[in-house]
Image 1: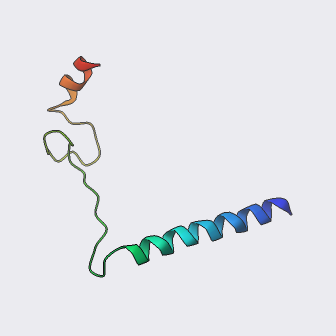
Image 2: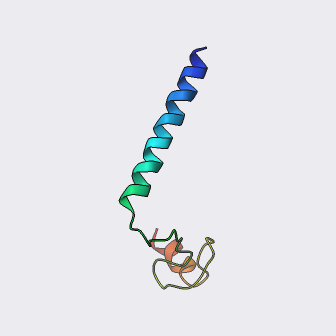
Length: 60
């Protein structure tokens, strides 16, 4: 029974967070994901950048 109450509370919390995001966003704003490298801008589709990968490993 307690797990049910915890599940309901988490569902309500997630719903409130999503509604808040909807109301804060602009009317014509769309959801987008930047799938490029942050350093050079090369499109990587979420994978590690082949251009910056070696330089990032050397600096660590």
